[in-house]
Image (cartoon, rainbow, N blue to C red; front, side, top):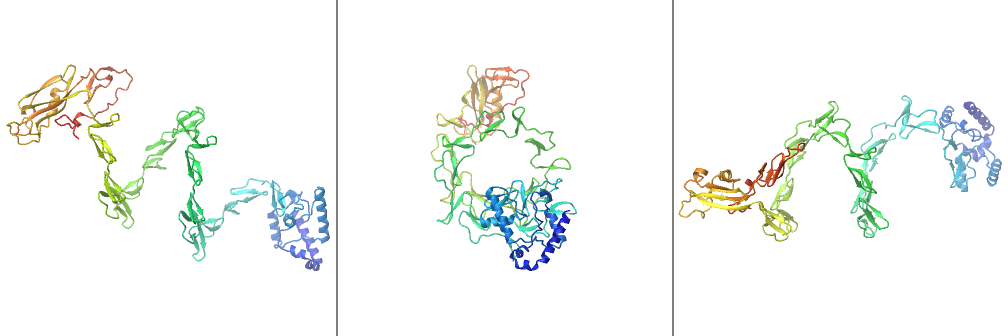
Length: 623
């Protein structure tokens, strides 16, 4: 039916033009209307929206008629005046006036000249002197048509527009596949370019160079000022800086006044630090606090309760529960934040469905090792592209005094620091004189060996053994030495020597060939004979300790202490009495058996043995 009406209209128009050729040549209106325009139907009301031909139908018909533009008969000037008067009268009285079918573009053009909309037609309104379609309508060929719905669901990469499925931006219709396919470029794009909507376009920051026929970087015409950088062919200030016309450079953005507490100046404005918010009443930044106490395994963060790492919120229990994996993780994998992840140095293998070790594809070069599937140079080495191997990192110049080359840089040795003025490494000195029994070490005062710092006395005090009193006894070779402790105390041997260390003790009219003489088993024999007894006797002769230095007169010296004896089910660990495994209490008072069900295999803490002490003959710890 539509084709028949269109054909009838074309016949009528052609007949009319054949009769009035002379009149159309003289008329200026006819010359303006001969321009290539879409096919226009005979005058009809806009209410018949369903009968309006769509764009595709009109284009097909125009193609069949060899793309000839069809124009309706020209109107006389008198008719235009009458229509104009009628429209003005209707506008003044407030009654709707229907104009003959005319393009919305013509009304808009006329509204621009008169700066007022005469009549925009149905489904259109006048907005700022221009005719606009109402909501739910869309401009199509000079008319406002309702946005119709498509009869069926549109395919992929298509959308419904004016009752028809149309391809989205960057896609085109493919008849063979019967779907919208991506617009591809006919040839491969040049360097630094990409295919966009079927055309090759330069990437961001690049422009097309006709001579080189490629995309070249956008460079600035001159060098940028300080604190500025070249961006897309223009010099722009870096973040936190702004342009100053007077100084003609980028200056730092500063705040007009000093920022309040817990705030800092950022990009020219005072902003509260992380975890704080602005309080209008107090006019300062206050800490973001939660309105109520957070649940277990949760913490207050920026004013809200959030679960700690490795936990998630459970609505039913209303608390943070641990994130567990739904199934047991494979070998060399562990459960992390609710998911099974391979351990460090392993990767997931889809075929084996397990974590396998990351291996390098080829053998690593010299001074390199395979790490996480890649060959990496060892510490102190770097990769040399020319030699294709790891070479030692060397310093570019000889290092100064008291410095050494480390990882390609000169660094001061231990106990020295760099002095900019002298340009060398100088010894680290303490700012003030150290206290008694202390020394300056790496720029700080530290207590000597065998001493500790006492805050109350503000000095280094000796680490004394508080639970027994130290005594010393000496006898010459061939005599006996008796050790004795008071009531309720037992002997504890700290140090023993059989031999000679000086020329003062037992040296009157005696042969002395050396002073560096000591029996290796001196302390062992003394401990075995006297330790844990109230009294004991030691004989100083070669039959007991052996002869460490032949021809030299020797002596025996023992440093010992008296301690409390350990109770039953307790033992002495070298410093204190401790209850045996399975018992509890204090080793000097009472050790009771632990109840069944407790962990009886708890490991004992090992204290420093007295064999590690270095005590001289005078009973003092050496430094």
